[in-house]
Image 1 (cartoon, rainbow, N blue to C red):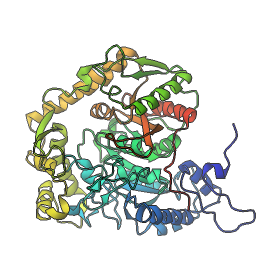
Image 2: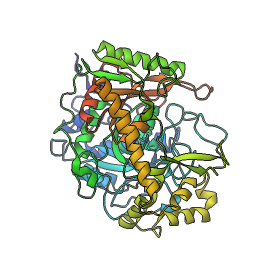
Image 3: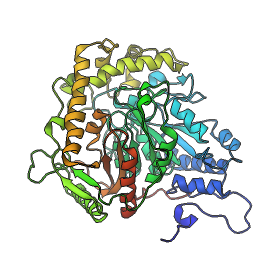
Length: 546
């Protein structure tokens, strides 16, 4: 195979004899290619950071106004300048590489950490979140904070993906001008890590960090054609991340290819005394090891869609024709790579919500089509939210008078015109709980979630069919893997079009490889083999190199 040139890889080489650092083409350059250019001296950290800042000015603030970056780090160029003489190495693999972090991840610097909330405007953190500290130790330039769905999409029912009262609306770079009468994107940017995914897709950073409770990495990844890893709960520390629910929350990388995701996972996966869930962590020495083209050979891949059981097909049965065609083509690639495809429906006891796991919340969202109706929400989310958010505000937040979820509810009510465009019904429900997780209904719901999604769901399905991974279309399997606390890896698999009967430009669809706890390395290997064989990632049109 021909070794890609620097131009092929997305890096413009300097002319012979040129003395000034080169300016990289950032529209499609991988983090690995950028690290190679830094290591070879063809670019330095300052030039690279300036180039990303210029691209943010052109496409995020100007042009299509993607609005993926909520705030820039005022010290980014100063940090880059100190790294100009440091090249990426085994000890500092990210030296000089600009990375965005989602604005629910604490940074102990001049940058606020707001979760997109007007109530936390100007709020800072006492210290870096553990994952930010790890990024800095690895040499990364923290470029800024990515926009998100406010409070990771737990504030209001039917809040549009990528909207926050403080940061505004993130747009999908594949259809940035297509919005409805309320200014909401027709092609969703995905949520809640919308800004993190859009920034990577549009080349506004080398890579980004997002978070997920249930679907918040996978959904924006599929909508924007990027790679993500939703890790096993406990692989990556959550200390310093504005929470929803500690039993499901995790952070994860967003990148333009699988190898970059593995490189970031090497940095982020570390035990942390501030997060007890990491004590049971299991990981390999190097997630990039054994990423090979033949990793799919002999792998047993479960496709939860049995033609003989059409009524039990929640994952594939409702796909639109073009999405179904893309998935069929992806499965054909897996078969050609030597995978054993097992078509069998998931046990209904696994994918269905068990008894006592949901509760009704009245929908007061003025722009929701189901306004005035009760909407079912997960008990675990609402009960853990109050306890976990109150702890974050107590232990991490500074430069703010907000100290509890009750304070946020009160602030929003007092500033409803700006803060409550879509309401705060979930926060109202969460605030009614005790906040100490002693309620019997919470304990029962948590146990039933684990019983249905893990024991009767993923475990039963994988055991029965002796599977290495389960293949889901887009983010369709996010909930069952999330409730089990299990990992998923997503990679782009094609382009689709149309939303709710409306014509749209083409936008991406991804496939998800999900598996058992701590199987990230296996899933990355499978995703890498598929990625290399299919090469389906297509950058957004209309965002050329500057």
